[in-house]
Image (tube, rainbow, N blue to C red):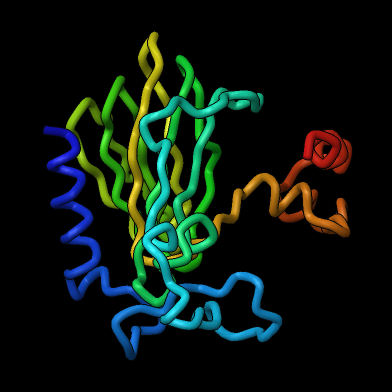
Length: 216
């Protein structure tokens, strides 16, 4: 049943005008990405259609539990144009999220896509924050079969609030959604953002910034 909800949500995400993809539209039946092409374009150059095979539209293993090795207690896999070259110009991608008990997907945003998430196992808290000046948190606890939509470009998160393992599927209206994790971007940039600038921005002592930068 949860998978049915997810598929309905994916159809809505890709067909609704409110969630229309910003990716380039195809001008032919398909444009399988040639990931080795030296030419740089917005997206990927098309592979010769005569050389296209079924494996260009295929991947497997979405049923397998992801490796959870980070300090946040989470693991995720993306199924984008990199994994499935046939997604090129189609404006969709998806992924799987695994969370240990009380594990989190740290606050982040997708610069090129809205997101729809459905829970397959466990209980997951998810939410997003609206833009300035309101910065309102819109949050919901999801159980198996529940679906939640996250608008494009807004900071959001996921957290397993149950005692067991949690699993969710995600879908995006872009072949390459992009991910910007807030902590990594602010405190782990290379080269580093000036610590005195960050201290003034966050209204904390500069030593606090140094401690945060050391973690990223």
